[in-house]
Every structure is written in C-alpha cells, then in structure tokens.
Image (cartoon, rainbow, N blue to C red; front, side, top):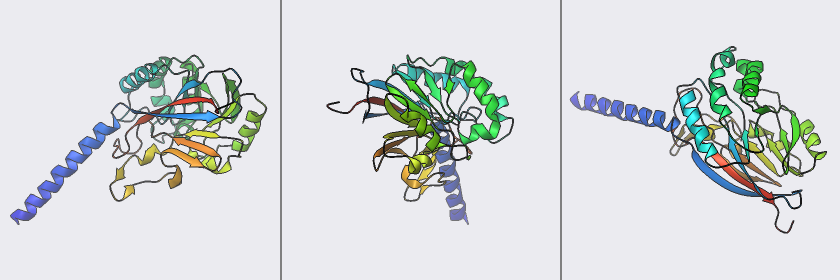
Length: 276
C-alpha cells in the first residue's frame, strides 16, 4: 500500500511539474525563426525586405494579456521589419461576444508595431466565431489593415490576404486572380494553411498560422490535437512549386499550455531570384 501511495504521489508531482512547465512555455517570449525566400516577379532595382510573420495572438487567454503582447511588440520592433503580417486568430475562445470582451485589450499594444510598409492582417476562425465586426473595428483602431480575400500592392509585393478556410470563409482563387493584375512578387497570407492545396503554380509563397505547431506535442506520440493536414503542421514546407511557412503563433487555445511547440515568430527576408 505504501509503495502504491509513493507511486501515486510521484505521478502527481511529475504531473504538476509538467503542467507548470507547459504553462510557463505558453507565456515565454517567442522564438525568432528566420528564412530567406527568393521570389519571381521582383521589381527591378528593389532591395530585399524584412517581413515579420506572427499569428494566433488569442488575447483573453491565461497565456496572453496586454502586458505580454506589449512585450512581444517590443521584441518585433527590435527586429526592424519593413512589414508585419498577422495570420489571424486575435481572440481567445468561441463566445459570440468574445471579441467585444477581449479585443479592446489588444489595441494599445498593436499600435506599438512599427514597420514602414505597414501592418497587415487576415482573420482566423476564432475571430469569426467571436465577432468579426468587433475584431475589424479594433484592428482599424490599432492601425492594422485587414484583408479578407483581397490583394494589395505593398512595396515590391503583390500581397493577397485570404480569409479563413477553417471556418469556411476562404476564397483563394478569387484572391489569386487579384494578385495577377498587380505588379510585384506574389505572396499569399492566410490563417489556415490548408489552402495550400488550392494554390496555382504561379503563387510561390504562402504564409499561415492556425496549427500552433501542435501546441502540446508529446514525445513518441506527437500532437494531441491536429487541426490541419499533418504536412502543414509547422515550419517551412516545400510543396511542389510553392513554399509554405507555418508559424506556431504567440498564444494558446483550450488549455493555456505549450509543450514541444514553443511560441514563435518568423523574420523573413524576401528578395529577387538570383540573376533577376
């Protein structure tokens, strides 16, 4: 009996220790990951640009409050990006009034983002679930440009923002058609990476979030929850003629834990193909 109690106590202590570690991991400063991507149709004479990609803020969770978001914004500004892209899911949870409750807390921190080409975002599934009009108002107040199945010229880029596929709002074919009438290197940004299957060969780069890179990834088992095709779970994926980059995001959903999938952001150097 005593051995059994000792064993149960040991399991309990280990469980508490893992939970505390996972909670701390969910609130840590994001890892900065880097990649250099050469793109076709780069305007002649234009230098490369630095782009920061973030996603999955999930303001209102125990893992993300305004103080932590402000700290992350300071970290981003220290990278001196030319452009900041935010790949959706600003709000935590599924409450229909969640955006109205939690969204205002992100306005002041996001106002602190500084990039000469601006800050551009797309919606995520949690944004649609919690009140997209409120999310749009808060982003506008923060100076963030929201793209929903729309393409714009941004410096040397023809940038298309595709609405969220996970909640059934994405129209990638329409967005790609808009990109083609612009000048500049084509880039798509969206929340869920599953639209990669719909990309045409003339779209070389997709930037996405949504997966949290698994959020809780157990050794020998893998992620507890898989929200997108496993191929697009995390990081840089070379897919036919495309490159897909999936960020782990900043916040957490469900339980405020991360294990084996720390928060991250991407610093991308985008420029012309060699010899272009």
